[in-house]
Image (cartoon, rainbow, N blue to C red; front, side, top):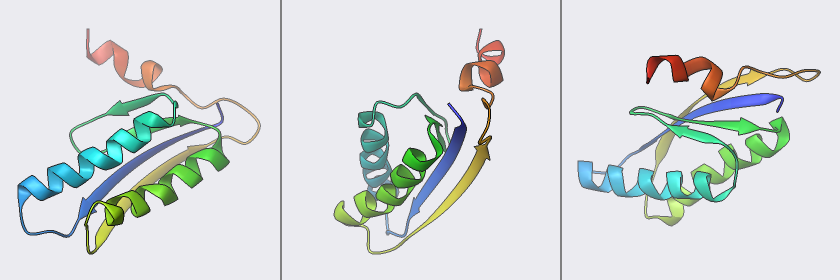
Length: 98
């Protein structure tokens, strides 16, 4: 695992219910990829191969649009170590959730 990506998708829609529905579809897609992920209150973190994660980030936009979102903004954080391992989700947060 040479990358970890955090993505926050913010649909431009008129109700909180629609925001949640669209974000839930994006999260379902992320989970379906089989990559390790952690859903937080503001963003979802995914671990894996850098190129695969970049494809997932791209597809998140398409999933939101297919769900009926007319426009969206996404915020992405990337930790990338091309010749090594990045810290895992467990290494970063497990000690805070015991």
